[in-house]
Amino acid sequence: MLEAGDNAPDFTLPDQSGDPVTLSDLRGRTVVLYFYPRSDTPGCTTQACGIRDRRADYEAAGVRVIGVSPDTVDAQAKFAEKYGLDFTLLADADHEIAGAYGTWMEKRNYGRKYWGVQRATFVIDAEGKVVHVIEKASPKTHDDEVLAALDALAAA
Image (cartoon, rainbow, N blue to C red; front, side, top):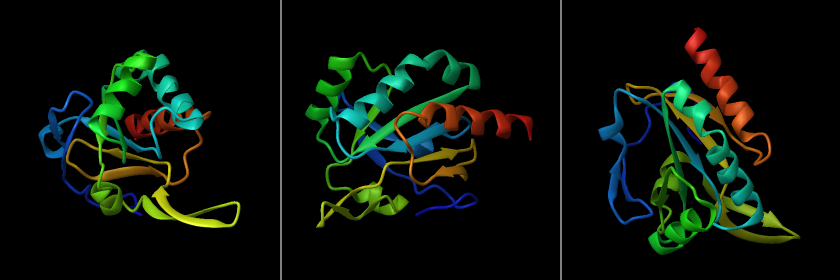
């Protein structure tokens, strides 16, 4: 998994509308890039709705929030519409970007092994460098952790 100080791998992925989003096009602005396992599941919904509900806090921090999962564009669109998610969701259907960031990994559940996305968040500065990582983000405390990190970075 990437660490603070690493350069954020560039990518282009389709958003929930099918429009391409390229990370390097967002240079000059801090990006909160979070990876989640699957749209419209309990934990992922809690996390996404938390971001939606704290939109004013993210805007005050001047950041762009982007969620990434291995879902299709259609699944991302349904997820965004169902919960009124007013931020960018990217479809990484072949999990190439999750792999580049180190969030695509072998997992275990009830003794069963499978590959999936580790819920993780990367704060990327205006120059494209990772400045903060939450390796195992909790859906319930995600926003508090990210906003605290953003406050600490702004104060530094």
